[in-house]
Image 1 (cartoon, rainbow over the protein chains, first blue to last red):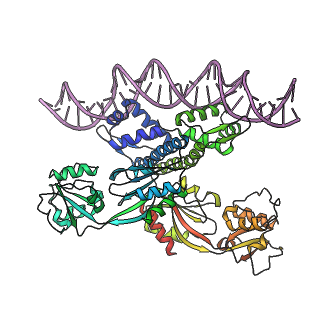
Image 2: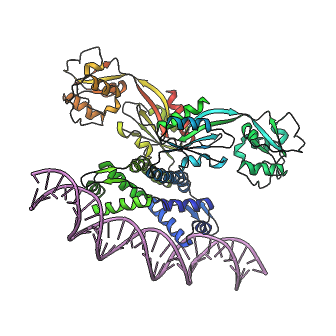
Image 3: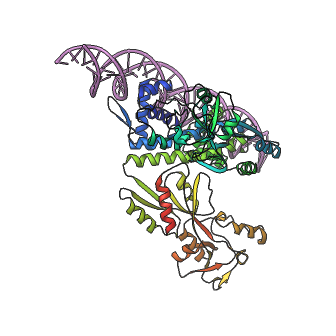
Amino acid sequence: MDVDLRKLRYFVAVADRLHFGRAAEALHIAQPVLSRQIRALEEELKAQLFVRSRRATELTPAGEQLLADAVPLLAAAEALRRRVGRAARGARTFTVGFMPGLIVTPAVRELRERHSELTVEVVRTTWDDQTAAIHDGRVDIGYVRLPIDQRGLKVEPLTSEPRVAALPAGHRLAGKEAITIADLADEHLLQDPDAVPEWRDIATELRRPGRRRPAPVFHAVEEKLEHVAGGHGVAVLPLSVATFYTRPDVAYVQVTDLPPNQVCLAWDSTRRSPLFAEFAAIAAAF
Amino acid sequence: MDVDLRKLRYFVAVADRLHFGRAAEALHIAQPVLSRQIRALEEELKAQLFVRSRRATELTPAGEQLLADAVPLLAAAEALRRRVGRAARGARTFTVGFMPGLIVTPAVRELRERHSELTVEVVRTTWDDQTAAIHDGRVDIGYVRLPIDQRGLKVEPLTSEPRVAALPAGHRLAGKEAITIADLADEHLLQDPDAVPEWRDIATELRRPGRRRPAPVFHAVEEKLEHVAGGHGVAVLPLSVATFYTRPDVAYVQVTDLPPNQVCLAWDSTRRSPLFAEFAAIAAAF
DNA sequence: ATCCTTGATACCTCCAGGGTATTACAGATG
DNA sequence: CATCTGTAATACCCTGGAGGTATCAAGGAT
């Protein structure tokens, strides 16, 4: 009758790794159990989800569809747990997420003053969990930096700010007034390429192929800067982050042809509470 | 670990009726089983969901929160089943929902021509399932009439059209060129009052209290018109519906102070497919 | 004081989920 | 060509949970 969220979670684990044994290990269950559960799921849905050849495991089209739907469904279930838990603990809370560099205190203080009964909390997010935190209920509303996957979100633009490159202090470009993306084409980017889509375009145009390292990606700003200082590459940051995290061994240089970073407020579009609109209005006023 | 969708479904059944016995009956299970499952859910979530006094059952705040989250979650799970089922059957399909009176064929034909591999289907919806059909996956995109609950939906305005009153042919107002809502204040409205919010305002202003009947609500247009013809009340319909469903024993009269009905396209905001934007563009062109 | 309504308890059955041991089979390897 | 290795499937067992029936407990109504 109803799908079993446990089986969906198992399915996602297998679909992510395309390997039953390793997925079972990650799920802390035995491999035969996992095989059986996936098979049971396939029978329940009357749909083959994987093509198992002896040597490889692949998703069928139905499997792709299920993966696309199962991930947000599991996140929604997680969010439900969190919100019910909070409601049970009695505290009317409102949690604001924010990316590094963004100043949320004035807006949060204003909301607290307007709603004395409300516990307004603040959570720092990273590049790759800024939307996940909204979907799984860790935050009610989030200050996010585009680009993001807007599926399931209500997004309201707030501001935009220019972006700068973070270079080691002794770098050949460190003293310059302004540079272009092309100047950085040979550098190693120490962050998720999705965060700087323009980088990839330049990369495919200008970079020599085969030069690409496996690219360890760093999430926390502090980590990125540590590696920049160590001469392992460069990072592109919004101006406010640069001014917030200053250190003597890292230089910031304006990048003229990089479009500004857009900052938005985002919240789960399936929810409706006057607090979202109210907070958005407050935040826009600053 | 994961919440159990079956328990959530049970919970919703109880929350809707605030009565364990009747909910159990509706679910086709025995009442003690239901009591035990709800209690198990309360323990899993570590949250009391109902206040059971001997004579009445009520929702706690946590229960209210759970109800708000469980309903869309169950719909999403249902949609997942449907979409995986379709994907498994191989057919790439795209289903367009529409409210009575709206002409969808030109846009649908255009989409079919552009995507010969796609099976484009068409489903008629009613006032109260026009958004539910989107949420539970029966339709991919829907022509809807405002007002709707926009939670979880991406909504694009299309057109708007004036609304008229449907009266019995012999009614005292039937011959008039145009009337106002106030003229209809004493009439019995044969449809969901939410569909005509202005009605309620007038009703509370002008109507004598105690006059309100329990209001059986009719969903299909044909049913409404049947009852209008029978002299059991009046209905308010968008002009296109009126011109589509004409019958000699029903007269339509323009209502001057009723704002026009807004027609939109709506689809599930958690999904992303180029087909949504493409179809929206096609539909807007007509 | 008694009855009725309604949710909770007690106790039984059975299936589904978890585990271990082992098999089957495709590719790699010598 | 024989063997080894990696990987999912099969076989079988055990336990917990979901379903059922019979019954209880207690607050309102009469």
